[in-house]
Length: 114
Length: 110
View 1 (tube, rainbow over the protein chains, first blue to last red):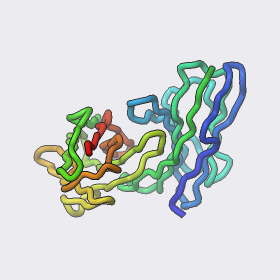
View 2 (tube, helix red, strand yellow):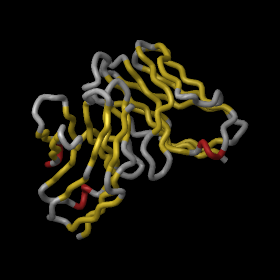
View 3 (spheres, chains in turn yellow, green):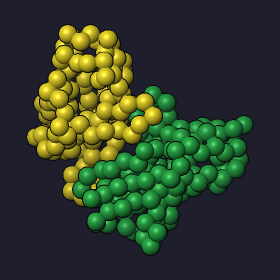
View 4 (cartoon, each protein chain N blue to C red):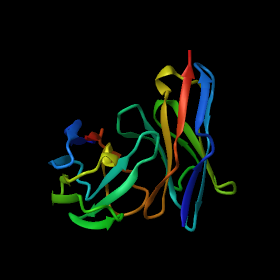
């Protein structure tokens, strides 16, 4: 299984809502990533988890809260988002060990904040 | 410091003609290099990767890339474009952390 799955595919939320994005992989990868991608732009790294521990936070606002419950799952909890947070949120995973390991991306969650 | 420059933001070709998407990189270390493709509203799919073995790398769907250290380039080519190749292409360098180029939009005309 070389697939990264993400749910939901689409999410519309108000600025006062609380929602979560979910990502799952069963490739035995121990690094997992959250990216944010605006239209016509490259993905921007948000968070990196290594061995289920947060290793990189790219100065992301606290209204985004990541969680890695186990080695296969990655969540992104959303609260009090702003309209400018509307974007495609991509999850990725990779092996840990050397930089030759490519990242496997999920299809993304299209988030709209009203 | 590490950077990736995709020299063309848009490339337009006719179906059946060659494709060339250009990528230059800058890194203090010898990075691994990747090309990803992204179709509209989809995730990124790996086309190919350079891992310091062969300098000419073959990928999926007929794509190839040649690593030229002297030119710090990793250009992506395909001999004959297909309509389904129309997408966004990202060149990525990794020397511990991934750095993305700004992307090249490939349009294929019938």
